[in-house]
Image (tube, rainbow, N blue to C red; front, side, top):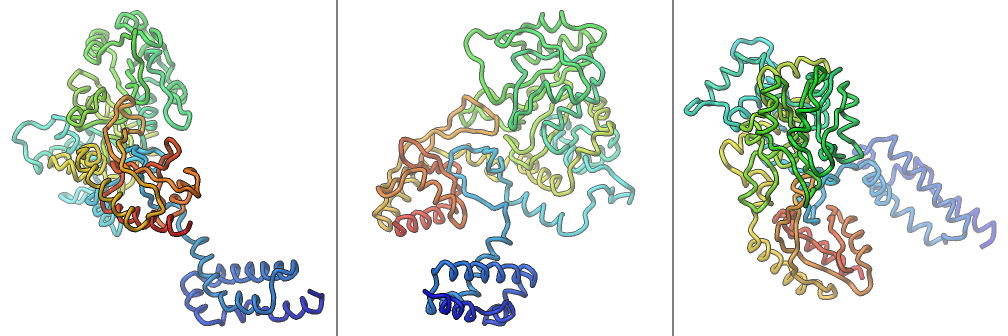
Length: 489
């Protein structure tokens, strides 16, 4: 193509103003904004000029791309202006998947968040007397009931009133995550003093955050006792001296030590703490209100069990086994929790009304014993038979509509995840898929690129979709994605 012909092609390109006057463009401008639309149109024109310069566009192709410009501009704007944070379908079999947001919220929690966030709320107002209140009251009474502090026969209404009268000493307070809860509690109760902890409990949580580092930031001094695999109650007792301010027990929720091991029980540590007049704190991490033994998961102590054993202050997460929003909960002895709450760091770490709304709705489901309303518990409680029925149905559907795919219903092992119950496995079912033309990694990538991304895992050269973590209402979405995958190859 000669230079004269290229000049002619350049002249055939519209100006930005001409592009904006094309059919359909005013609506795009109105929806996406004038500045963003103009910038996208200019970028598109620059690309066309580049393609003309490289001899990639003919007269006919120029006419075609100009005619299709509104659709292309709209597509680019949607991609550029769309949300980065998107819902995905978790087909990994990891129930509390940290990279996928851990615990999904219940429908009731989402409704309560929406109604509270849409307008004003009584987050810090006592509606009875019109005075300023404390936001802790919205969940503190619920934790009290669930952890056994409320006496038998005490009504919800009277318990709320009691908590309102006693807001200076809330049973439970809320901060933004469990690391914050540990940091705040250590700073409030042990700054400048020593905290005794077993070497076998100096854990590292996600993102390379380590208990010794958190403790250093709190202003407390770490005093390690025992060995990695064996720590006796005598090790704690011999380490106590005038600078000791706290005994700390850290639940090893994200790994196991097996074999030649020894570890004092919470009751033994509590007895020692009482004897020496030192508070005992336990970082439970996951925070279990539900008896997981009923679903075959062992080794996760409940919050109530730790408090009954005599632990003075317990910290745990809201978005793990509890099944609520990301939060750090601090509960236990009224005086100690009140001291933690008075710490200036509390205001920097507290959460807003939306977290309280989601947490309140989640706890009310526990109070009603409506465990299937909480997605995490519902997934753990699913029977193998029910999941198997779904897997077989999906295989039949794929075989009927996407014959190119090799698909098979398979047995799988789901895990709790999120640094919880590391040794636990939940028998599950899934579907394994493969395509002769594509590698398993490429299939997994294409599923992640679906309109609602589907995150699976690769095993033995096949893509595995574990249905324990796929909500039943998403089965049809997965089927459509698999059909499209087969049709595109």
